[in-house]
Amino acid sequence: MARNRTAQRKARQLQQRAGDGLNAARDQVIALPPLRARLTHEEWLAAGRARFGTDDIRQWSALCPRCGHVTSVARFAEVSGTTELTQAFTECLGRHLPGTGSHTFPCDWAAWGHIPLYGYTVVVDERELRVFAFPAPDEDVAKNKARQEERAVAWQARVDAQAEAEEDQEGDEDQSDVVTHLPRSACLVALVPDEDPNLEPTFRVFSPDADGRPDRTLPRRVRSERPEAVA
Image 1 (cartoon, helix red, strand yellow):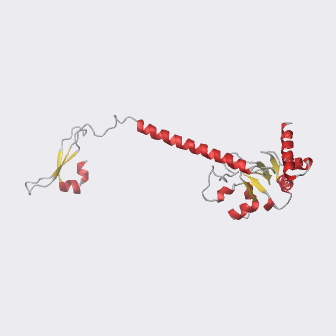
Image 2 (spheres, rainbow, N blue to C red):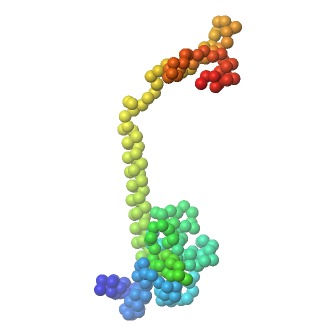
Image 3 (cartoon, one colour):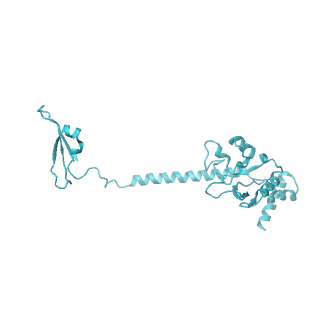
């Protein structure tokens, strides 16, 4: 009953806009399959003919379930360069425009994605294909765009708030327990003689955790040519 009242309300709106009879307008509204309907290929083609009044699929249009953008098949083919006209019912036009994303209008949504957001399921040769729905005759695209822009603003606000919270958390962390110096003697000390030119620079190696091995003093050439001797 509620669905019938909705159809009648939309039919009256169509009647006021186009001046057609109430029954003709109501038939135009009811011709649309319900969302998530499972249709055969023939049923989908028949619904398209009933909605757009032509067999020319280039004159049909698709409604993106994510952003609400309505794209004609002819326009989609022009922008994307595809020859598969039914692709307009599986991808939003934004996927073929620069600088678009999930929160733009049009967006980059696809009916074949992992998230089940689509219009109809069409069975073709025993294969199930997810496609976008047909837009209603009175589809309010401007309202859809405004709603998408509101979602984009809310999403950006959440991202900014999360980034600010992470910055505050990093600034509030206690730095008192940060280790800047190890509590032991240096492991390597260099001795460069500046009074006796006959003495060779040497390196003294400390091994405080070397299981009793003594400290060692190594000439510079040993440190440079045989670094494994330091180990």
